[in-house]
Amino acid sequence: MVMVLRLIDPARADFGQQLAQKVSQAPDFYRDAPVILDLETLARWPAPPNVDFAALGAAIASAGLICVGVQNGTPHLTQAARRAGLAAFPSARPAGRANAAREPDPEPAAAPPPPRAAAPPPPPRGRCPRPRTAPVVQRVVKGKTRVVSEPVRSGQQIYARDGDLIVLGTVNAGGEVLADGNVHVYGALRGKAIAGASGDREARLFCQRFDPELVSIAGLFRIADQIETDLIGQRVGIRIADDALVFDRLS
Amino acid sequence: MAKVIVMTSGKGGVGKTTSTAAIGTGLAMRGEKTVVVDFDVGLRNLDLIMGCERRVVYDFVNVVNGEAKLGQALIRDKRFENLYVLAASQTRDKDALTKEGVVGVIEMLRDQFDYIICDSPAGIEKGAQLAMYCADEAIIVTNPEVSSVRDSDRILGLLGSKTLRAEKDMEPVKQHLLLTRYDVGRVARGEMLKVEDILEILSIPLLGIIPENEAVLRASNTGNPVILDKESAAGKAYADAVSRLLGEQLEHRFPAEPRPRGFFARLFGGAA
Image 1 (cartoon, chains in turn yellow, brown):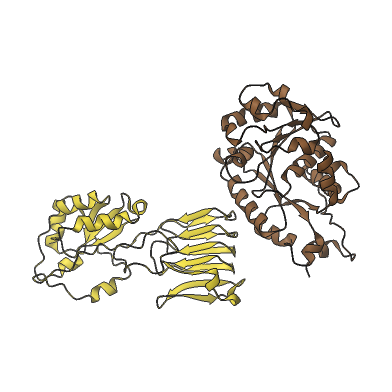
Image 2 (cartoon, chains in turn blue, cyan; image 1 turned 45 degrees about the vertical axis):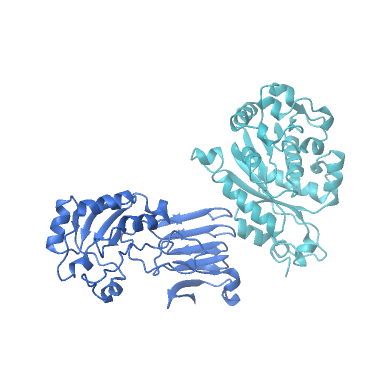
């Protein structure tokens, strides 16, 4: 798993502090996570600034993350990063970049925009109705799919970190299934199911017999009482469209 | 090879102790050397249901603590010479048992018996977890109502993680469902869950269906396991369950219903 941290202003003194605060929201999630610095914004400055990558790397390390390299920099910036011992990654263009590109170019002479170290919402808590901010740190690498062949029983929690989760049997009331990717339940879903647990709004949820306690994708959730009763017992797929959960009956 | 079977449910009052006594006695009647062990330290009842409460000198906790030898604590049943009871302590609590102590006693029992039936306390805490820890098989005692079914589901999850077999990555604990206090009339009226619904939720094989039966209370009060009441519906149902536990294939017998109907109609169409 590699997260991308987009650097907007290297000169901000509170960079380390802001990053540490983000990390503290989900310490387990971020612990020793490798990070790639995205320099695209800096590269679009009229005169790309000099960046002290060694100091930046140390600030990231003190927040508990590991800076492994840079991407999307100018040759000059990339060279400086290399000298600081960082790898230069070919430009990856994760989904959601389209939005970022539309942002106005920062005026370096005027007040610089605050550094953006926004993170995906911390691992799922049904209480959080919306993702906090548009995730700028994104998961680029997808993990393996996890397949569970036993019924998921009351009190059990199964989390497929970074990947999809496939449950061949039922998820009983009081059981919880979570995945950073999609969740498929081939039996009845009577417990809680959470897809896109770390903020992936493209994640989906599918089940053969729909009777959940709660369903959630990327922080948007619906409890049993808020689910239309004519969906109960049906084959249902759930996705996000226009910032809301959409329930599709599968034929 | 000795088999350790835990009788467990999560929920209290569903019939674990009654079923332990009945099935333990049933196994002994079939010639298996059997011991029933009461894990409900502090709330011991199994000795009462087995009718040996006046002969308890040393108990399970004494053996665990090395205060008595196993042979001194085992109480031989007066009806069957191959049936023994290991009573719980009434004056201690569940903290008196340790995992190492329990494993040690169960290992000793394995050398002497064919079947070791562990009567679990209610709940999912230490006492219940110790009762299931050494189990090879588990009989999940469930009443046809939602809270009991959910608690059974929880216990099934623990069996998959909190047992010696789970810890050592051995073949998982073999699970059996024993439905107790099954009232055909109330199921038909929709007041109780149907067998098929319970099986669908718990998805484990059915060992038997014990009807709600006045013979059970009578048996408990007189200290005679209900399986000895061979004319009673509950006694017959327990005898069938014992046969299935021993590997026999038997159709599930159902408590009498007003209209004569086919077996499957009765089994799966009760509330129609």
